[in-house]
Image (cartoon, rainbow, N blue to C red):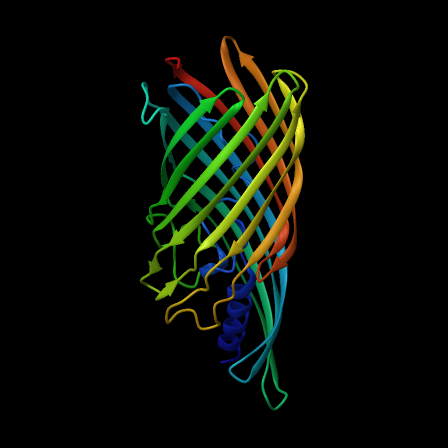
Length: 321
């Protein structure tokens, strides 16, 4: 009985604060959109052709919990680490659609999470029960397909795109380290980039909303999530640039459904950090890389931590504009 209550308490602590991916106050505190993924060159779609990209993502964060629930006082915390690798295929169609270039993407993530949650539950008469639980898994996540339409005009580049999460990845009820989400989700994002290679200045921004379906196994519907990302980069040559990037996240509607027993818990976070872009050639094949780091602050109902991205992209074939 004591272990059961301890697990419940630790689970409540986890439910409020934990998100190894981007630490949102959503079901399992996780969302499929990776905050910080669209900063530098967010508005740019490459020329028609086929490309491959590999994105490595790491997040480490923690949170403390102190609340009253159903006559009980709950205190505790969550520590989480996560690593994802996302191989991505990109095809930019030849010809024009509404005057722009149409691009299609598919990604199949594999991820590792290590989550530890501890809690102390105090009853109204002063008795306490404490416990810790820990899960770690390496598994395939939900595949994501996307489409975008982008335009170019002088130094300006802009696009609008969608991402669709397909819930077939690893998910188990009660597992703290689920890699999948067991729910459909759709993200819509618009992005713009100003790039002047004479001065070397790049300014980029992206804003979007994530709309979540219901997890039918838990009767939990995560609220709508807003994300805003930006970057300012000074390019010293066509090969090297360095700058600052950041993101802001706000859950604009609360979680609903019978499974949302702890309330809506709308989350918020901001983050800033450096970005470095480096382009080079392997033989005659151009390779683009980007390294990003983010430190989070102004956190509400989420983990607070640090994240990093390393992305490598190269063409398999390019057919020109």
